[in-house]
Image 1 (cartoon, helix red, strand yellow):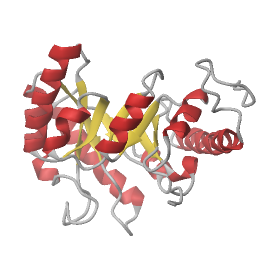
Image 2 (cartoon, rainbow, N blue to C red):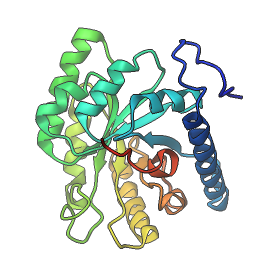
Image 3 (cartoon, one colour):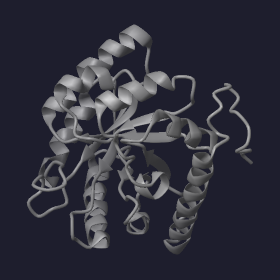
Image 4 (tube, rainbow, N blue to C red):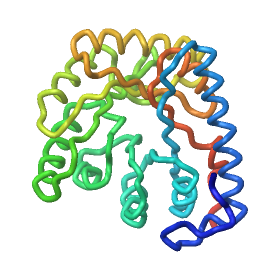
Length: 252
């Protein structure tokens, strides 16, 4: 049990405040929702919770780590690189989930355990080069790679991602690259769409992918507003932000 009135073992002194208590309460509520959804789906394999901390301070990540969070997601490289460097003492896996420009691959390869937004061949090439360079310099582990697939009828126009028809080409490219591991798929339910229908579609795309690449069974899907639907249709990773961290901090 976490004692929110004590400093953490590194002496940073960030867990004895009201924000830590707020995060603990919110995190417990989300974990309860996940447990309930897993039971309702008849599953025995709870998904991994990735807490999306974009726009929130590094101190919140430290508080979350003290509450048992092991996986954190970030959308912007500059923010992720800064936070991961400042929190290097924590046992945290960093997941890059935002749109990735090829020129940011070198930076992302320094801290990310996974990139969940791969939707172009150029990004695969850039990550392969960056990871190879980083492995030679530091011996880092292989990078887990998720193909972001668009679930809109006009995929890519709204929430991003590759067309389902392009998934196999991207998968082959990733699997042939040294230092990259093909994990599976990531998707965001289209705006205004039924999330159950969207994630059922994603599960079907995943089934096709696994037929050709059996190890690529991961499905990263589900956010604060639709995690239950994602769990129902087999999500192995959930990306939850606002229901745990609250609204974006005010600037100024």
